[in-house]
Image 1 (tube, rainbow, N blue to C red):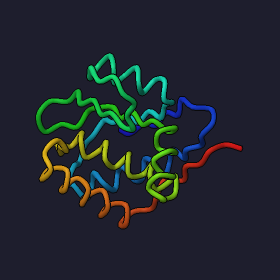
Image 2 (cartoon, rainbow, N blue to C red):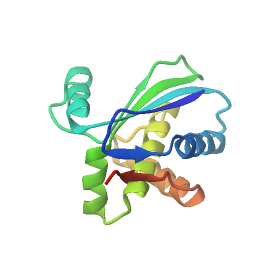
Image 3 (cartoon, rainbow, N blue to C red):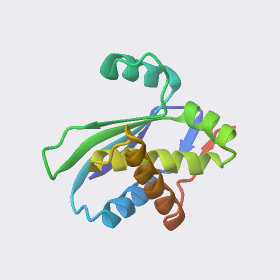
Image 4 (cartoon, helix red, strand yellow):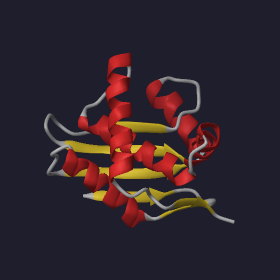
Length: 144
C-alpha cells in the first residue's frame, strides 16, 4: 500500500501520479509488496527530522525511514518541497522532475540502496536517471 500526504499549503502534488511512479519503480526492482508513506513537508519540519532522528544540523531534501523486516519494504519517505524547489533552480531542471527524483531516491533507499560510498552513489544516480526517463514525472508545482 502506498499513501501520499502533502503537509504543505504552497505546493500541489498529484497523489495518483506519485503512487504510479513508486509502483513502477518497485515493479522494475522486482518488489511485489510494499507499505510506503510519502510525506511532503516544508523546510522547518525537514530540519526537525534531520536534527532529531539523524543528528544532522542541516537541511536536507529527502529522508527515508525503513521499518520493515528483511525482504519486506515498509517505511516512510519525507520530502522537503522548499528544498526541492531551490535544487531545481540550482540544477536547472523542472520542479516536478526534481520532486520525482527525490521520490525515486527515497524508494531506492527503502529497497536497500545506499549512497554513502562513491560507488554506491553512482549506482543510485544511475537508477534515478533511468527511472526518471522511463516513467512519467510527478506533476508538482507551486500554488499561485
